[in-house]
Image 1 (cartoon, helix red, strand yellow):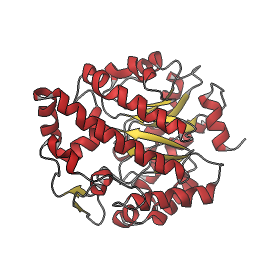
Image 2 (cartoon, rainbow, N blue to C red; image 1 turned 180 degrees about the horizontal axis):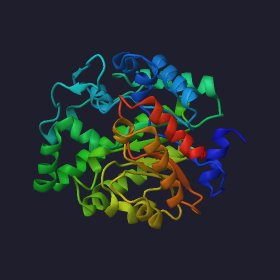
Image 3 (cartoon, rainbow, N blue to C red; image 1 turned 120 degrees about the vertical axis):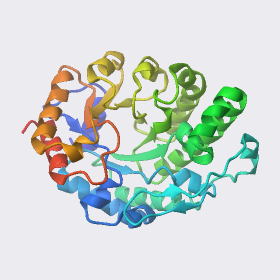
Length: 336
């Protein structure tokens, strides 16, 4: 049984002696392979090579095709500044008024912004790995795309002042997530994850998640499944404890849980879901390898008897994570 087959077996409730280990290694793969982040984010083959090299070096159970939070906004025409070795940021927002939505272009992931490079990374990894290791395509979620287009503060005021216009924005950004995710699937990833940090309960209350986001997430994941996704994965970082009762309605197989949510609490609500989590990402910088190993073992112990569990980071591991800590994390999953 190869790793992709083992992964699928875990989703179906089969248990193994070793715990699946899928730390969210995105741009950190560039640092771990001594490549400048700017090059990693702008060249799909380099991104794919770094992902593959990092996975082979540390022996965890998946690779990820993900750029940064600016990818979708850049594809729509936003100007992006690229530091040499840090994540890029937008020079300005391009949506000052929701009425401007009709003026924004219809994206084509095959040619707009850096999306073609991420498709190229997906193709590279599928060529190299075939169906032996899970390849996860990651797209930004609707709330986070919206905050990239118009700024989080303006978006939240829109929610308060004009809920109907807010819903129109979320519908538009959900369609972007869908289109990009389906393109990634067509170019070789096995599954598509939606990562939506701006949808944290620290930013929006549960009723907003249920009313405005959940229906679009459910539709998005349904499209992914129709396009051939082997599994659907939701990654909302930060505090999501109030959302847990509704995750089962999103149409997902995997839910990432950040460190702010006790794993034992998440496991109560995830009876039919695979829970991925939830070591604190900053621990990869400020803790020792012994600490990381022990914390990994603690999480596995908490999930004991739970077949659908993946040891993972609560969100993306920091760019400058200590290599020895990532190695200890993987050792923890293997119990040695």
